[in-house]
Length: 198
Image (tube, rainbow, N blue to C red; front, top):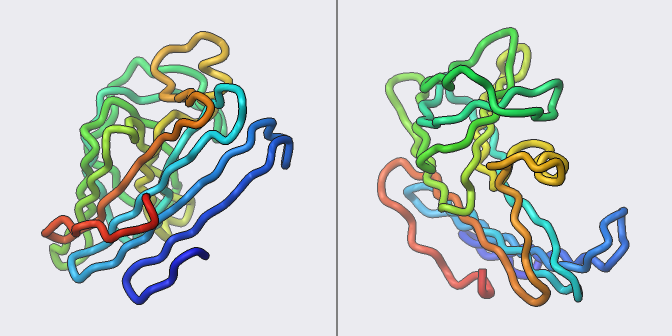
């Protein structure tokens, strides 16, 4: 942990080339900010290698919400946790907690989701343009609901390598970086703090 304050934390991870089966060296920084209105999450990945590096970003929050509204244009077919292609049917707008559980891979969304809780409470998620995909996951038993803004579809690296369009996988040049952020708020969008350049 690089910074730890009551309302702000910065985490930094440095990966050396060829560690854990990944040939590129990179640095990842995550900033977590809390305010009275909600939270803001930011991350960036810097390519420290001499070659272009494929990369994907995402946030994976769990919620006790009973439902989430997400406007998206594309639903991806999948087998297990692996996306295999674009589905012919349009995605649902509302996703509720269901006892049998499900995972839905979506793209073409506007970066906004509204979570609905008991007694009429709501929480709004606002993702930036780098997060062009979203996963809605409800486990079997319906203990929680995940709305996960991500930059790419599940297994996007392999799908992109096979020539599938719209996977969201990015490639960053040596010395360059990619950034993404997510705001979770009940009303006012929190202003970012100085998170070491995040």
